[in-house]
Length: 167
Ligand SMILES: [Zn+2]
Image (cartoon, rainbow, N blue to C red; front, side):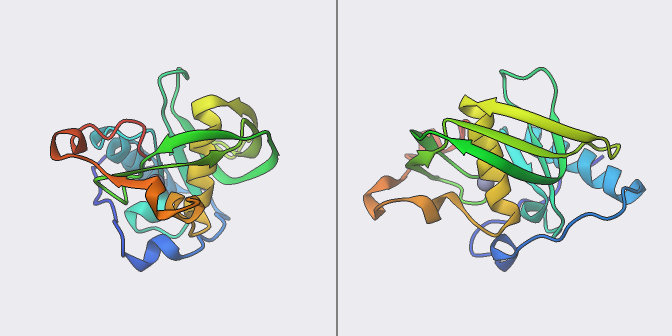
């Protein structure tokens, strides 16, 4: 297991669409373990594979409300409901936060790390994290959803160390 380097803007990999995973093998398991280590090391709530330089549709999410780390391979959001204003940060855009609209509830599906189908109904922070990470594997960043430039702000140096809920 290892902590990987997190790509930050303007790394072009963050703007590319990740490819579907067709085979769950040892190297994919290693990638997932490394992604979990990297997310925890950075105090993040989630991480997508292209953030660590791998263009594959793999995401990991770990938020206090859920007991276990969520690993999703080839995830899709099948339904979005409602809208709410959230504050968001991203490990690939360090030192900034923004305010944007996310869905109130989402339904998602994919497979777990053993290839078993998973269906999720999520709200709150989990729904937000699912949308954030799904965006990543489609080459989209939260700053793309900002309604205006004033919705993005730079963190003060003392705040920058506590990137809560960044993913
Ligand atoms: Zn992010």
